[in-house]
Image (cartoon, rainbow, N blue to C red):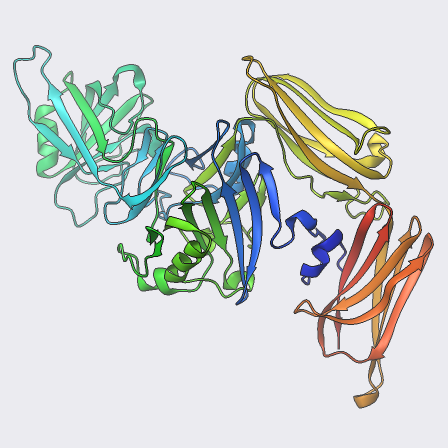
Length: 585
């Protein structure tokens, strides 16, 4: 079966063989390897090719008054995992722009391996043996190990009896099976009843129903006791669980009606921090790659060449979020030590690795950009949020409304992350000619997926600008964003046939392409092998008039294998192209 792909401009230099039966749109020149693709003010996306072959996906961020970075629990509950793209899609209305995967997690329960603090709210406690990433207000990153200094204490309303201060070891993470004693705090974020394990519990109704936050004492009243786990955690409640001697203290001291104070102390996290998330290992410190931080990871986790995710910061404050492809994407992949060297080469002075392999992901809006056959559900991620007007990159950016079923229309996400008035328009670039309002909406924060169909909207061919303007209801300044879109039906209806005749040295291949041109154009036809090398040409900038056209190449037989047959047409609206994959025998 033939595969047809729309090819805009210089992306032809990076052609790869499409999967049989798949219809794809090749990224425009702005998304070609090495090109910097702006997403929102302060955030850009770049694809980099390195020898190996290696391919890097890099988000470069400079936080500003509207752009921030923070960890998030993607499903909204520690008991469930979710894909990065579903988590991003659910947060488009609140400004989610781009994101990556973060911490390791328990495949069975979905619980992250280390800390998860979303702002000050503590979802899961730190793993003291592994590095974590802390994001300060303003975007300064810190990589290092964090330790929970959790305490709880029964209170005497009269203030005459000083009850002992007792400690807890974890938040929303069960004690290791090897622990003979210890205390854990469970909150509603745990997402399910407490584990059914031997021990004692006290259920506490928290004053005001406030969540557990880092370094913020809170108080409540004990409303129930229990044994053996399986206790439901209601909204505004927490459960203090203790094992053996620790559990005995809970039962004896925290009787029903008792007042209690709790605090999850973690040094190094300020009250206004954007959050903290676990991961590891530390791979760059002080501008020097860390070859082996250990941190309790297995040799296979550190030395295996695979897809990997890392986050670092440069000396001038830029944040780098990097996902490198691996063997599953046809690339060599990096070890953890090599990942550190890579981050240093990109300018990082400090960096941390995150979960790798099938968990290494990057999303731009609702689009996953790391090529996986299916997207793994993960526990948490880092998401860049922009609180101004947003338009996603049109998909595709070059629309070909020639009724051949390929790229006949485009779509965008228009994001309004604050309440206000949003207007989205499309207009001929340079002014004059066609213009239309695609959305005019006033109300709460929202994300609208808008279809741009030239046939339905009667949009003539040519270059266009899609513009969104958000005027906030609170009187703060309006923000605007533009995206370019080209409507070009020059080339369409590509068909490719191939045949082989003769034997031995007399063996020849003939490749015939037929297509339609809606106007005069300069046509090039190439045959490209699986390594991306042009091995034959049927035409090179041949001037052809509009109508049904054919270009044929015939010559000495090429080696058996898969090839791309690429036809491009240079017209007054730029370069458009179509490709089909064939197999020569």
